[in-house]
Length: 535
Image (cartoon, rainbow, N blue to C red):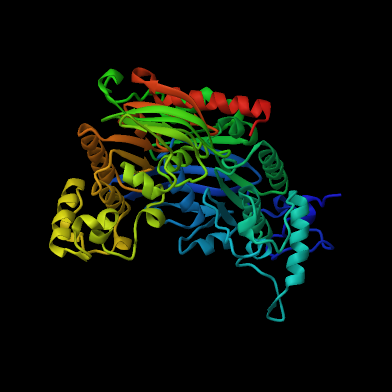
């Protein structure tokens, strides 16, 4: 029989309670019925006010949903709570005591743990070591591995996690890695868990297990902030739901007081955002035809046409297959199947990135730091990376030609030419993104694939990047834009292809291309998938 939550949840004030010494529930030892109280918290970044006087309460033993469109301020808010960022104004109390913002370790010491979309599992370490990372028990100054193993087995049984303690974490599924993150928080006696899109990578079975675990944690007194784009699961799991919009917390109600429609309305401010005037499809000559692109379970039979000079947006939630689709077209997924017709010539999908570049198809990836740039090199060599032959005389790089071409590219992108000698690592996110774009513009491609080009950059840099995109499309380049910011897609794309669960579910044009229409299409698919138990 599975151990009870009372038997396994650590005792407040102790590192853990052993199986022979049952721990009381956290609820009984709480000093306050309010686990977290946030008063008038604001935060600004260059060019953007991320949070505006936010007031928020999380009750002990409560599952509190936090929803909002991309860019609403959710990520900044939870970074404050987890200690990764300091507010400009306001204060935060945990269990009635003020929270100071020295570092995330302090937040964990007062009982707050965040489980982000990007997991913090160390792949080369064992599941056991990951679960006890930073909190391993000791005996006579040595790590007590036997005690770790016993506690791991108890927690794994209670959580329904079937993972060998000494299995390498990198070999586990995303769902299992996520459970390890939760185990790390539970065994370290965290009374508040922040879950950021925890079900995005999970199938129905894994989701049901996580839902069950959330219920157990709640019953044992753990408070949970639950962030998800799946509004049905928010309404089903949460006691109360708060909505954020444009840095404001605009409403908090019991879950029973919300419907999915009222949540969408609060997220959008009841204002339907439509695209800027779009060019008629008849005015665009076909540049690229994509047929039947399929990649494992990620992408299924996607087909579309991209016109010369068109910006085609691709919209969907996390895990919809948008990134995988772009990578398949760009030759970064050799296992992908499908065909292209580029400028009237039939071709198979490129097998390598180099093959795609030769065709004139290039990808500015989602992760600019690890996949788009060489951070240890200066801005100028990064701009030249994709076409060193263009500034070479024989086997020697022409420094004068390199400087002239780099200066011209920098001016096109709104990048200060005087900073071409600065190391890319030290540049802002906006300037790094300009370098990624400039690197590919140096190749003069036919088709530019942009995956989250404005993630993590300020408002001014966003405007400059979209001005560049519009200038390129006006010159005849075809652009495919993926962004989690649906307002961004609607505003800047001529048409919008909507994806959910790896499939194409709509192609919107003109007045049909609205944020509300996109969300309704996606939620309809999610509803059917949940009803049928489909992956």
